[in-house]
Length: 258
Image (cartoon, rainbow, N blue to C red; front, side):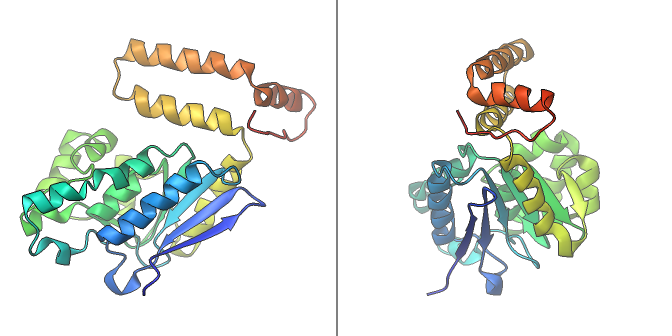
């Protein structure tokens, strides 16, 4: 049986690398892959050795969308009963920082998967798009919601209505990706960022991620209140005291997640 997901745990640096591995179908996201990916994220969410996660499809392609073979005979009730939202929720609800390393195509579900990450490092070859309209469908895992929040209505509308792809450079200009690098350095750059995050307080990282994700859909004053409360809570952590002490002593902090 084809091995779909490869996990490389690196406890010495706190980074776990997840790589999609269906190269013959450009890492198409079938139900089995999505379920396995969800199970991995649920596991890593509680793994004390994992401080940050890098998600990639490898050197050539990130994910070229859903497996179209799944759509040939599926009816509404079939798609509904799959409850695929639970697979995406496992990634959304992950408390660990997620860095996507994108080379080649990130289309349809692949683009939506990348948008579930907190940071996106794109190789120059990367192509992003939501081409569902070309097969009589529409995005179903955030392409009309996360994309709109990331790049704004008019840029997003052009992508979802035309199905056209955009380059890594265009994605960078729109604010869809965090940075663009040479293809051969994409994964290493993502790991480098993940290692940096893994050296910080995991409690502070979790609070930043939680407040940022919740606050974006809240009224500004409510979001600011949430931010203040999270800021105040951190003063009761050992990590915060260690961080301040290390800064004053001009040394690297040793965070314990307490």
